[in-house]
Amino acid sequence: MNAARKALLRRNTEWLLVALGTALAALTWVNPARAAAGQWQAGGRLGAAWLSGGGLGPALDGYLRRGLTESLDLDLQILSSIHPFQADSKSDAAAPGAASKQEMPWALGIVPGLLYRWDVFQVVPYAGFGLGFYSWNNAVTSSAGGQFGASGRVGLDYLLNRSVVLSVQASVHVVNIDGSLRVPWVELGLGAAHAWGW
Image 1 (cartoon, rainbow, N blue to C red):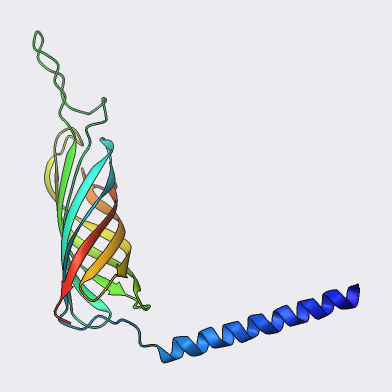
Image 2: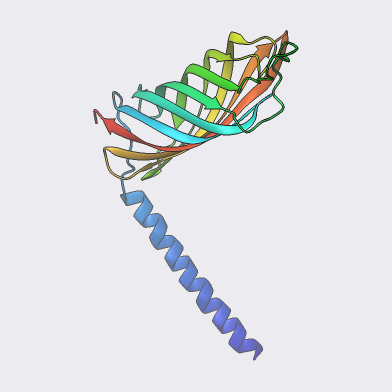
């Protein structure tokens, strides 16, 4: 019985090595679906966001990309989120005798940046950073208004064909609030885009 198991293990190992060798040979012969310099991509994502002082809420963002090289893109993102599900916003109390009304937390960001992409057939992971302008209301922090900040993003594009791209992205946004760096906004979105200019 011991010899039968050894023979079965050896045969399975041989088949695994043949399968791996065939897969590696196929990978070396197939050209990856590389993005060309000059390619454009415009799209949008719908998802969820966590906002400091606002909690969770729906998020919507749009983006426009331009390929600078085969692996580097210039990326402009316009991000937004509202947070209606939080009852404990940081808004000021209403005047005595007036109905109590709390502000709904919201945030908006306009963030240009650079993305580095790794083309792997139809699946294209990427990572990037950006510097941008952020705005939110008093329900988020007492220093509401416009401030500059930075973002880090990671994502994955799936190329359905040369024109249609599915996308998932997570981003974190760091802003200088009251003299200290904070992470007030994190987003996760799923969406689609149109690509042209191959």
